[in-house]
Length: 142
Image (cartoon, rainbow, N blue to C red):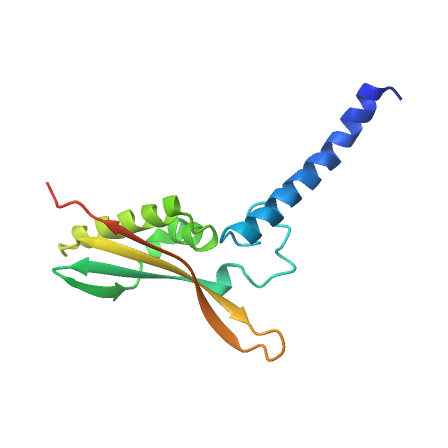
């Protein structure tokens, strides 16, 4: 077997190791769920969609009110839960602002919080930890 065919044979394994290494780094350095990316942590972690939640707050006329995000935001909501980046939480906030305005409700800003449930090692007592919080100012209607 020549060197070129040996390199070609080793490429899939090397790519798999690279994807796994990037996944592990992202999970430890960002709030990425181990269930996303390469998915290598899905069988070793409870940090999937069932153990994350999004809370949404709307500011209008100087006061904040928590709202229940519309289930129609399913994909956008799920993405913000599992990969709570500034881009995805901002997108979710803009969707919520648009929906609130379509209902005729005033909106000055939307705050998105992404929470994760963690379990104590010995007692398994659950606690919630804030992973990301993002407030998006909403420009006034034209």
